[in-house]
Amino acid sequence: MNNKKTHKNYENFRWFFTSNGNLVVGGKSDEQNEIVLKNFLKPNYIVLHTSKPGSPFMIIQANNPDKKNIDEAAIFCGCFSQQWKLNKGLIDIDIFMGEQIYKSKLMKKGTFGVKGDVKKIKIKPELVLVMQKGKIRGVPKTTREEILVEIKQGNMNKEEAADKIAKKIKSNYALAISRDEIMQAIPSDNIDVK
View 1 (cartoon, rainbow, N blue to C red):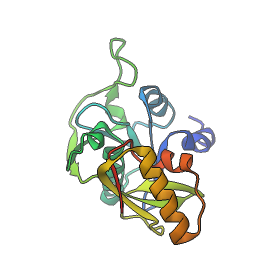
View 2: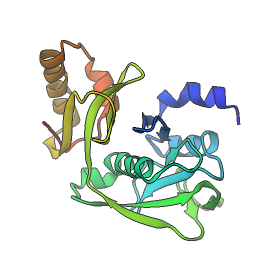
View 3: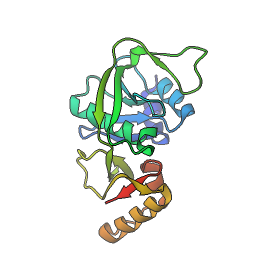
């Protein structure tokens, strides 16, 4: 795998940097899940996915990440899943190694199997918006960066939430961030802005 190419292209996917500085990358769709697992996965990397269908495969780009990194990646994974849209107060996340993933010809696009033991944790779906690598990102609260806005599950659709976030950031921090950039950083619908 060409790491330069991989690192250069991570911004095309769901991504953030953990509080320890590790890149986490996941898909935005079935097609992207296929690409992410093909281009970003190593056998010894940790992968996360919700226990229920409808989630990105999130890959921590590091060998032996600590518990804090894994917890942060789990929160990120859960917040960009169908479980967020269903307003689940706690979301079950499966944690496994890259070498446990398999694909058969009968599996539809974006679907993979996992062999062996899977660790499970529950996360509370909440994110904060921060600036990482010059872009606004939705990340877990344990971030090192200055928190611009907090988001939780709520009743606003994605467009309304993006407009409210843009106004809040502009008035509180004098930063003009486009609605499109904000929409790339937040979950789909059912959002509350704090």
